[in-house]
Every structure is written in structure tokens, then in C-alpha cells.
Length: 120
Length: 105
Image 1 (cartoon, chains in turn yellow, brown):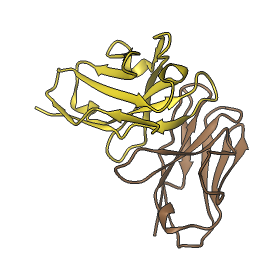
Image 2 (cartoon, helix red, strand yellow):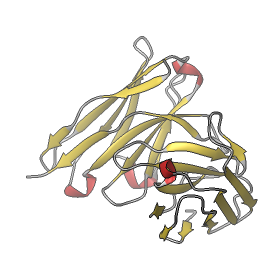
Image 3 (cartoon, chains in turn orange, cyan):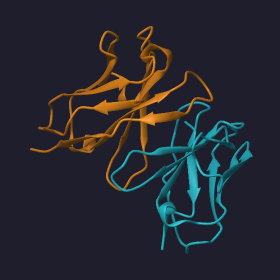
Image 4 (cartoon, one colour):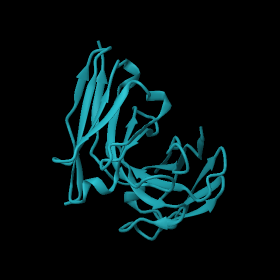
């Protein structure tokens, strides 16, 4: 079954870090990009960046540069997103999504989402 | 950065209605435009990519058109499962999403 399965709900205090996992199955993990998208309640999705699981190359949206890291473990077909220095503004559902590379790509497979709540 | 603006933010419709949603890009993006459907609490689902190509398995009552800066998603005959929020996304540069159009009763 082609799917992306994400790790569970996280509750963090301001200033902490969170690491979300995304395990791929049913397709060749290294042939497609993994994108990370977050969505705050009542807002549209916000793209955070992408990773090439084959090469490890990454691209981060400027807003998150220096605060987010994408990584992967090809042996387990799992992608990771780590976000540091959390504030209440980071409270959102975080999704991983499979996509192509470069212009014209689209996200045709999504994880179920991971709720990250930042609260003191 | 490219900004994506959808209209209307919400609309009321009935089963069987023809529904049209608009999406405008702040600069030309060619045909690099995707449409997604999201039901509350779920991940977005890809409907259309490259402005007008229907994703496999998606009903043919969904169609997309446009190029450059103006795009449209049309639902030819609204079904009960189509009451949801729809997002456009540019895939030319920053993968920016619009703010969504909620289709409700």
C-alpha cells in the first residue's frame, strides 16, 4: 500500500525542538522528493521546503532557514523534519508530502499529519 | 515571493450546482498550478496538476483551466462529498498555496 505514515502528536514548550518522522511505503523512496507543509488552524497550507531522499539535498523556505532541518534514513525509507526554537506561532499540523523535483511538481501523496502544540 | 489569491473565500451551493473557484497569481506562472481538496481534519488531496490535468482516480466532474496568472477550478455538478475546502498551489517557484475556498451548503 502506497502511504506516508507520520509520528504522533507532540506538545512542546517554547524554546524547545520537535522532530517529526514520515515513513514511506509502497513506492521507491529515493525516486521522489519529500516536502514538508504545515497548516495552522483556519489557515491555508504553508510549504516549508523539500528534500531529495536520494542525494540528501534540501531546500528550505527562507522563513524557516536556520531553524529547520530535513533528514532521511534510506534504510528505513523515513524522512525527518526537525524544527528548533519553537514559539506559539509554530503550533500547527505538520504534513509530509511526496512530490517530484523542480518546477511543475505536485504533491500526490500526503502523510496523515502530526499536530505540534507549543504551549507553556 | 509569488502570492496566490483565491476567490471567493467561501461559497454556498447545493447538490447538483455548477461551482467555479478562481485563483490568481501575483506574477505569471505559466501552467504551474495545482488544485487540492481538503476535508476538515484530513490531509489535502491532489485533484488537478499542471492547471488542467486530472489526477488519476479523481472524478471527471472536476476540471481546471487557465494559464499565466488566472486559473479556475470547476465542479460541474456538486456532489455531497464535494463540500470541502479547495486550495490552489503554484509549482513555479515557492510552492505557495492560496488561502482556500470553502464550499458549504
